[in-house]
Length: 282
Image (cartoon, rainbow, N blue to C red; front, side, top):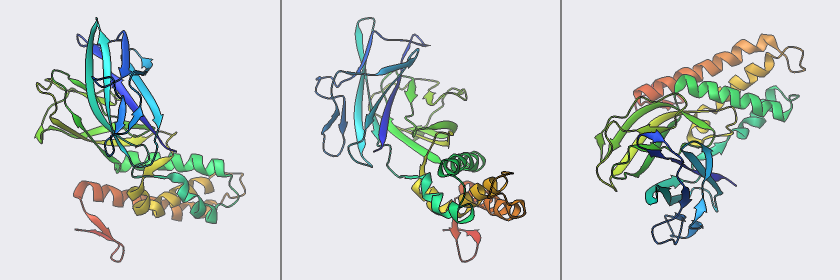
């Protein structure tokens, strides 16, 4: 089963801050996280978030079904006053597939390689692919909170923010402060003045070496290249039964072709015609 993580960043007077209490709870104390399709409570009101570091908190729950969307309310108590932030989240499995779907194709070429090793290399190759191509684009939508400048992006599990593509409120572009490489949220230059406006953030994320999932469309489109990259890596492992240095260049060239294709498709918005073998307008 997949899991969803609710994250919160708390600041007071511009600094990261630990509130006296931080829980999931709507203003009526009825629910903490609920499904947007049925309204059913998924996390009870009053459930505390876990402290990650100063001002950083999270809560993880198991999705009752794949592909669900949720509404949540975070209530933070600061100097005796309760501040609430409402947000939305998408279930961890929505639109994601397992990297292990590549296993059988890798084993055609490297059948003696242990499965645990294949999984490790799949994650390395997928991370490198995403770093080079910026193919994994992620969109976050939530509502603004009046006078709140900092917002957590709720990125997919085991991914980090690589680059912001756009930040809009009610379809109007807004400016955010320069982010540090370790940050996975945004801070506006000027905090929104109204609550309930539609905030949309488009960004590029890259997987960590713990990431075992990828967007299903990305796996479908670039599976051949990813498999070739994994096989090239494995065949270069000297002293192993599957070591085959003469085969590395061919597989590596297939991986590099996929990287180039993904890069072109991302920056031009072009699709792929498998019969012509060149990027064409869709």
